[in-house]
Image (tube, rainbow, N blue to C red; front, side, top):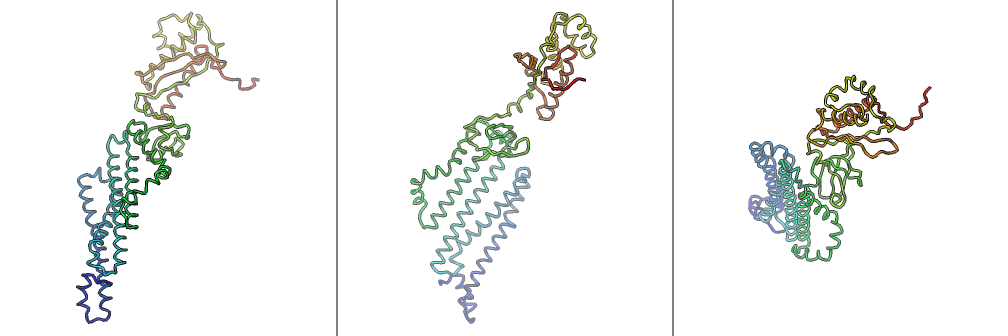
Amino acid sequence: MQMSPLQTLVLPWLANMPEAGLISAIIAVLLGISLLVVVYLFASRLLLPTLQKIALYFSPKTIGPLSHLIHKLDRRLSVLFCTILFLTTFHFIYPSTELLTSIFKSGGQILLVIYAGLIFSSVVSIAGAIYNQLSFSKDVPIQGLIQVIKLVTFIVAAILVFSIMIGKTPAYILSGFGALAAVILLVFKDTILGFVASIQIAANRLVTYGDWIEVKSFGADGEVEELGLNTVKVRNWDKTITTIPTYALISDSFKNWRGMSESGGRRIKRSMNIDMLSISIVTESMQNELINNENLQGFLLKNVKPLVGQTNIGLFRQYAEFYLKQHTSLNQNLTLMVRELQPTEHGLPIEFYCFSQDKRWIPYEHLQADIIDHFLAMLLIFKLKPYQSISGELKL
C-alpha cells in the first residue's frame, strides 16, 4: 500500500509504536473522514442556511414559499462540496493501492456527476417555482418544459456515469445510439408527444391552471390542477381526479370554459314547453283580469298596445323579456331574449336566453331556478298551461 503525504507526516510521531504504519494509515483516514464531516456540517448547517436567511430577508415573499426546495438544494450542495474535497485531497490524505485509488476515484467522479445533476435539477425547480409566482405564469405554464429539462439532465448524467464506469468517452457511447434510435423513440413516445403538445398548449394558451375543461372521451369535467409533460390532472366536480395524456388535448377535441369565466356573464339557456291547446286570443274579460293583477302593473305601463286581440302567448313572451330586463342579477349588456322554438309533439317550447352576472356555480344555479320558478307561476295568469306527460294520478 502506498503511503500518503499525510501519513508520512504522522508516521514520525508514532515511530516507537508497534504497527506504526497501520496506525498512521488509520489516523490519516480518520482525519480525512473528519474533515469531510466538518465541511458537510459547516456547509449544511452554517454557510448555506446563512445565505438563505440573507436572501429571505431581502425578498421574503419570493424566497419564503421556496424554503423546502432550498433546503433540498443545501443538502445536495453540501454533498457536492465534500465530493470535490475528497477528489482533490485523496492523494494527500488517504493511503491506498493503485486498484483502490482507481475505484475511489471513479466512485467520487460518479458521485460528483450524480449530485451535479441533482443540483441542476433543484435549480430548475426553484426557477420554475419563482416563475409560477409571476402574474402571467397561469397564462403560459412551463411545467412541461421544466420536466423536459430535468429529463435531459438525468439522461446526460446517466451517459457520463456509464462512461466513467466503462472507462470510455461519452462520444463512444453516443455513437452507439444510432442503432437504438427506434427503440428510444418507442420508449419515449409519450414523452416526445407530450413535449410537443406542451409547447403548442403554452404557445396557443389552450389550457392553463384553474381552467374548467370538459373532455368527454376521458370522462373529465372539472378544473385543471396540474399540467405536466405526460399527463394533465383534472379535479372533477365530484372531487374525483382524472388524468389525461397531454397530447390528447391536441389530438382530440375538448371544451374549455375559460371564455365564459373571462366574459361578463354565464349563459342561462332554459326552455319550457307550453300546451298549445291553452294558447288563445286575449278577450275583454281576460284583459280586465290582467289589468287588475298587481304583478303586471309595471309591465302594463310599458305596454301601450291594447291587450285585446293579442295572443296570451305573445303577451307572456313580452312580459318575460320585461322581467329579465328588470332583473338586477342579469348582465344587460349581453344577449337577452325570449323566443319560440319549433313546435313539437310535447308542445310549444319557449326559450329564455340571458347571462348571469355571477359566474359561480351555486349562485348561477339558484338564479336560473328562481327565474324558471317565477315564469311557471306566471303562466296561469296568462291562461297558459305547461305541457307535461300524464302522470297516471287518479282524481277521485
